[in-house]
Image (cartoon, rainbow, N blue to C red; front, side):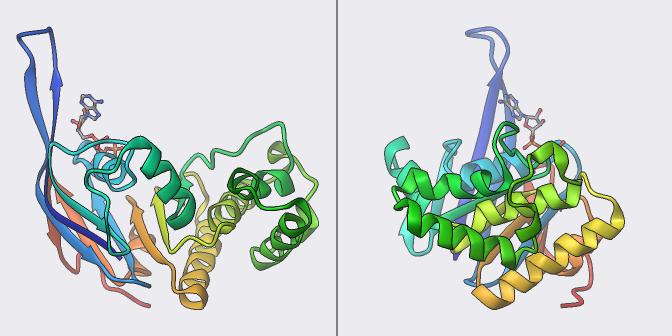
Length: 233
Ligand SMILES: Nc1ncnc2c1ncn2[C@@H]1O[C@H](COP(=O)(O)OP(=O)(O)OP(=O)(O)O)[C@@H](O)[C@H]1O
C-alpha cells in the first residue's frame, strides 16, 4: 500500500541569497492499494522522478505525508529508510543498473547477501527466482553477454529476491524494443497476480499504462487520477 497526502516539493536553484524556488510537486495525493499496479505518466520535467525519489526515501519532501504498508515513513532517518527498503521495497530502472563484473546469479544474489542470508539458503532462493523469470540457462553469464530484455529480467529478479511487497519502477521498458517490452510487461503482470506485489511505475509508454489498475498523470507538478488509457487487464 502506498499512501501519499498533500505532498509538496520545491527545489531552490541559483546563487546563495538569490535562490529561485521551483515548485515541482503541488499538493500531490494518491493511494495505491496492496496488489495494484499504478502508473504515472507525464511529460519530461513534470516531476515523476522527484515523486518516485520521495516515495522511496531518497529525497525529503518539503511537506506532506507518506505511508507505505501502514508504516508512516514521513520522518524516517536514512538508517530507518535503508532498513525499510531492504524489507519492503524493490527497484527496477530503465538502465537495469546491473553490476557488470559479476554474473546473473551474483547480481540477483546481492540483496540477500546484504540482508545476511546464509549462502546455502541464498543459492536455493536465487535458483528458484531465476527459473521464475526464465533465466536459469543464463545464471553464469555476465550482463554484457545478455540481451536488453534478459538484463531487465535479471534486474526484476534482483528486485524480487527479498520478497518485497512494493516494487518501484522508473521507465522499466524504456530501453527495450516493442516485442521485448511486451514480454517484460507480461512478466510484471504475472508477478503481480501470483505474488500480490504492488507496482508503482513511471512511464512514457502506453502499453505499460494499459496493464495498470490505476493511472495518474502529472502535469506541472499537479497529479490527476484518470483513465488516460484504457486498462486491458
Ligand atoms: N536536484 C534538482 N535541483 C533542481 N531542480 C531539479 C532537481 N531535480 C529535478 N529538478 C527539476 O524538477 C523538475 C522535475 O524533474 P523530474 O526529474 O522529477 O521530472 P520527470 O518528470 O521525471 O522528467 P523526465 O521524464 O525527463 O525524467 C524539472 O524542472 C527539473 O529540472
